[in-house]
Amino acid sequence: MSVWNDMTRTLPDMTTVALAVTDGMLHFELSVAYEVFGSAPDSVDVPWYDLEVCGGGPVRLGRFVLEPDHGLDRLSEADTVIVPGWVDPDVEPPADLVDAVHAAHEAGARVASLCTGAFVLAAAGLLDGRRATTHWAHTDVLAARWPRAEVDPDVLYVDNGSVLTSAGKAAALDLCLHLVRLDHGSSVANAVARRLVVPPHRSGGQAQFVTTAVPARDDHPLTALLPWVLERLDQPLTVEDLARRARMSSRNLSRHFHAATGTTPLRWLLTQRIRRAQELLEKTDDSVTSIATATGMGTATTLRRHFHRTVGVPPDAYRRTFRLRSGPDRAATGVTANRVAVPAGRAGSGSPRPVGPSGPAVGGTAYAD
Image: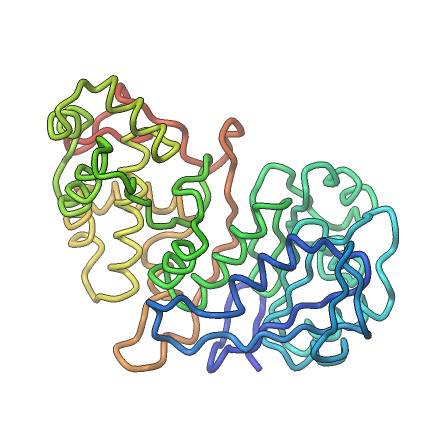
């Protein structure tokens, strides 16, 4: 059993993930958790999760009937408990489910809700005094019914350490990938995202990154460009540099880039620099200054500013939490990011703003400031 509080964790052998299910839960969120935690990608060579489905007997999910592996009392033996979306927030969740989730948290489990599963956590008292989110259509109801929770409607997920909540539907995947990243690092989380064919870029300043897919067609204008850029992240590349390499105008490059990746060239480039910094922080002892140089950020100050703004914690704190040990075991303690993502169009404290070719230049490369 792992021991958690809201800022630190002890993670000796975190393997068991329990899905808490009952009649009327949303099968989309359940399937997201099953896909992420059920099996490791072929490219990943780390001990994977032992996934268990726990419920009080056969569970009806829409037109499907699910036979749980264990009863709800099994939740107290899990390292992580996932509570999928609750079908009707206006209906009180079953008392046995609420009690089992509360008991699991008391026993030391990390508890995460997906979508309207936050209502189950609230009923269990886990959101009192904590920041939380849920599907945007139900945030007002959650805030009104549970006034001791600090409900934020403008984020993809909230990580309080031992209690995590996600917004609606696709945000469940964001939170599940975040949990994998907490446990195994960004490289493993990226491999999971690749297997699930996650869209290469989600709008907004989410604190998680997935490897951006290279267009499959050999004749696509970006097929050769993106790998070329990834090999040169230490260089102060500009939109003009990328356009010149792709043999097109900057305007055409931006158009092709947005169509293929869902974002601008500079936003994609900044994402790749931060993702490379994450990997170096996890796997090396390089100084922040050296990593700033290796990722093309120029100075440690620039890296710290953009890293903190995007990931939610400073590089040094990220390293303490996520860094891989040289041996088979990883670092077991650290600070978890009590930080969340701000979707596009809702600029908030610490959220990166959209950046375009005319953005301010830092070290020869344009960044959001």
